[in-house]
Amino acid sequence: MAVSAARLVLLASAAALASASQGDREPVYRDCVLLCEERNCSGGALKYFRSHQPIYMSLAGWTCRDDCKYNCMWVTVSLYLQEGHRVPQFHGKWPFFRFLFFQEPASAMASFLNGLASLVMLCRYRASVPTSCPMYHTCVAFAWVSLNAWFWSTVFHTRDTELTEKMDYFCASAVILHSIYLCCVRTVGLQRPAVASAFRGLLLLLLTAHVSYLSLVRFDYGYNLVANVAIGLANLAWWLAWCLRNGRRLPHTRKCAAVVLLLQALSLLELLDFPPLFWVLDAHAIWHISTIPLHVLFFSFLEDDSLYLLRESEAKSKLD
Picture 1 (cartoon, helix red, strand yellow):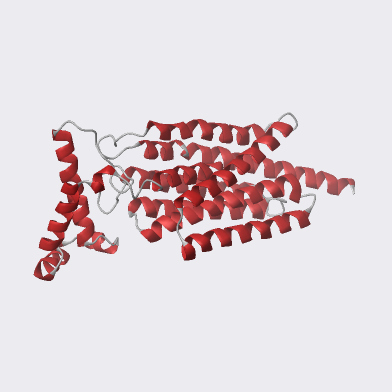
Picture 2 (cartoon, rainbow, N blue to C red):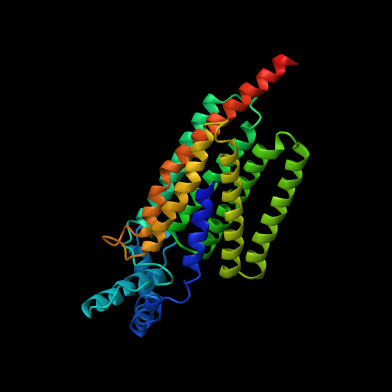
């Protein structure tokens, strides 16, 4: 739900800086990369590199040029530290120690654990909520959309490429829009299905236009940031307003409200932007780790709410 909304906003903010980082603008870094490519990335040297590169690295798409950038990054970082300067960022990211083929090991693992938490809670939801529940199919669909988003988040933090970056952004946008649809169905659609259907069509149109513009016209980080901030805030406000309005009548809505409020508080972790501890754990990874319990809490709310709706539906059927 709101987890992906805040994650996308935070990623967009960081990505907007990707083309203007101090480290990759340094002449020592650029000269190092050029020299490394001349020596290692052509002719016999390139064949030697490929023959000695671990298979898992080649399968993950790591090239000779990528290796040059990675090694020259640490050369530059070492020079900065020797001269007493602050660690610089490179291409909008802090320097991370690569583990196997994982570019950002802690964030990749945290994304995987977020997805695993969503999968476990989906299985629990399907085991405890009958398919006859009015919200069953909408909640299950939301869970699968969330799982897809965390899969691409894991891939993106494992290997940052143009494709994985776009898939991470687009799938996170899909989660936000599906969360708004989920809220619409719960607050309006159960009484007015036609409204929910029309709203779903509008959201699909918005997602298609958003993805098409960023893919076919220009990947505009500024536009992407503004669009997702607006959608994310609308999503959070709608859920929170509904929770506050129904808090006394439906005690389980406190779980949903807690997710919204905790997420906003945890997002402040990103303001503590600092070089990675042990070159592995940065503020973004810590934020990812902190959101894992929020999936458990939100899906617990969906389970409680679905069972409540089922009981209410069965009671009305008996009266009829």
